Image (cartoon, rainbow, N blue to C red):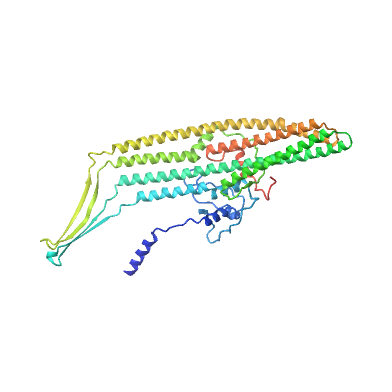
Length: 495
């Protein structure tokens, strides 16, 4: 008997409320874990979907060699890496950035707890009603030690169709929440890839400016030597020096753009400092865009937002079924049984059983049914609007891809060969000392502008692929998948 009491007491205490304090220092240490090393950077919280069927998860390649563990914590049996200060030269490849964002993005970590709320609602909806126990004791002073006592147990059994509808409604809601979390994850992945591509484009522009700065400094040195020899003027030297100063100003502007982009990437990754991008540059593979029908089928299968709306509609349908089920009569066992002991009665003990039946004659639950029907129909229209928005996004994305692909092909066929030939001519002219300073600098400015525009065209082409990925809910064939296929870069690439 004592063992049973101890076991019951342990179970009772185990379910008691346990307060959790918010320690700012420990939260800061968790933030620093995102930069504590490869193992911490690639931790993968459990339960993020890819928009497909079932509970499948996004499986992004992890280029850092880290080990992915469920729950966003260290592997069982291993101590977490010691927090350390933020590295100023923290860099990440595209795949590393995606893995870190899925593990440490604050919005994702917050939204994932919504699934726990939805699962708790399933538990609450499928729980059986507790029985009620009523105890009565009557003592009359006139009769000395005589007492009258009664005990009554009551219970309301679940109505099968109401119970089933409640369970189905909460399960559909949990499925919808899971798909909504998957949609947020997919949007985060696309945002991280877009931010990383923008930083890669800035790095390419920085390389162009550095190369142009070297050329202009050579022109400045050549002009200064010609001035000492009497073959040039002070105005030419001033023009050359101003050209160098302009390139240095552009370099500083690009450095500011890089820092802003690194802040954006660090915010997406949940890091406590800016995170820079490393890789092989902006991909520019002129892949053939898929057809609209293929993209539409892919979106219907994979887009988490559409799947979430489908589950929301199913939830509204189950809620309507629940309101219809409540129209039917049901019973409640008011005494199961009732035992009474009364020494003042000729029959000192008796048993009784009571049943309470609700007959819905006056209230047919018509109001709640009408509300549920209108809510379901509104959800259908919401899904229609969501599907129409996805179709428009796919169609517009395909048109943009075709246009940008034509622009890239024109640059490759006409503009880039002309720029290479013109740069070669300028180099030979500078080596032979046959330069018209104004013409050379004007040509160099045109070449730099054209190459910067080509970087922008390639960045726009990559971002168009990413927008198409966003609309389809998965990676489509094209340049967007190119970074994942490349081997990870080693070391810090020149930014």
